[in-house]
Image (cartoon, rainbow, N blue to C red):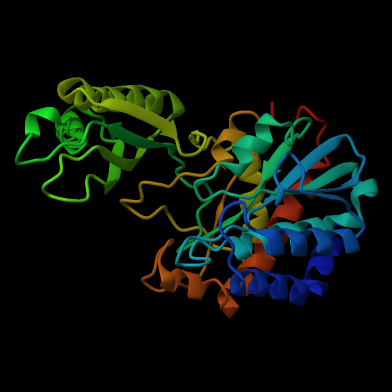
Length: 376
């Protein structure tokens, strides 16, 4: 059965590579992936999947299902790009590999006793598409969820951190800075106080915590007391629980700025919080054996690699999930660099997406040997 699945994927290899390169050549930002999601949907529809495009209240979400077996496997396709960098995180490869795994399994789902769903999940780069889809039922009844992600090296389990993004604004009162400064309420001062408080807080945070932010505006003229100041902050920790504690402490720093100056503080979430990634041990074992069987090699995790965030983390708290990294030859370039984008359409990247599609499909074949309590 695995040989037949592999043959089907290798027969479709050029189609998958073309899909990857086409998505790469037409980068679309979070929740604007109209072309990429349509290409994914059309490819799966031609293969016999029942396809819903624009589902879960998201115009660029895709649900493509085939089979009716008792074990339901979801394979996630990401396809959003980064601002100014295009596919510098290789989501073109993720989408093509997910489609490839689906194509490989499509003809055999009845024999295997599987239901296979390929989920096109928009807005991973900060938008939390999977979080929204999870809340709206996309992963209900799923027994296992998987995807692969390109990186500089193969990794069976990416250290996945929990992340929260907040938009902060202070509103004060303008006044002539020379003639009537006492009439003003300085929003820039409120932002400065908050930043100083956060800087001091860092001494008391855990090594796993990260606080980063930028100020977008804090006044427009030196002779006017700034009426408004705003910024964007990103908070990271190793677990969702630790992130919640960190977020509470950081928000108190912003509140201190408002209290000290008399400004009004407004805080809003930029996107849903991302939970830490908790991969399923049994699924990892199966995937690694299959990936090695198709020729992938897993070195040790690079020293100093702190991990990154993914909305697949939220899925992993509810459904047995894996998110292995597939290595591409990017030389010294790393994810979210323009040079990494260029590496995601090389011959090495093309081979990686085909082989990772086979490894995921083979993992689904393995799951067919278990009943629905396999993860326990």
